[in-house]
Length: 195
Image (cartoon, rainbow, N blue to C red; front, side):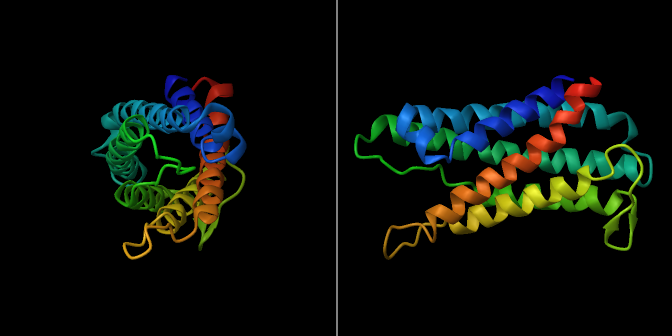
């Protein structure tokens, strides 16, 4: 339950953080803190997930996949901790700092993509399509989709050295929200079941 709660609350932070109305309401510093708190919650969830997967780490198939996915995802959350902390520092120390959204860290996004791919590959499927029927059959696919959205967000948030502007702030914001919504959808059943 604590793992699901950590992932759900972290997802909510990343869901509201990129919304222009939220950033306008709370200000740049509070918006940056929202992302940082969300990253800490993701790291907490990742640590709990790694601990839960540890006993089955030597089992072939799903046990080993769950362990590696949890470790790689946890590494990704640490990259997000670093990125979001830097965003908070910049917001606090630079009065001219007015960027709407924190720039997702590419390394964290890559870790999330690898982790999501491991989980999806280990899940029950018919070819590429998920095998329906079992509880949570849809979660590996939705989780992987969230990872893809975060990856797109990281690419869109790349700041071009020549212009100093992001590739597409709108695309970065929309994909961050979409990824967070996917992660939230995956966390909510854990809150209901208490697992």
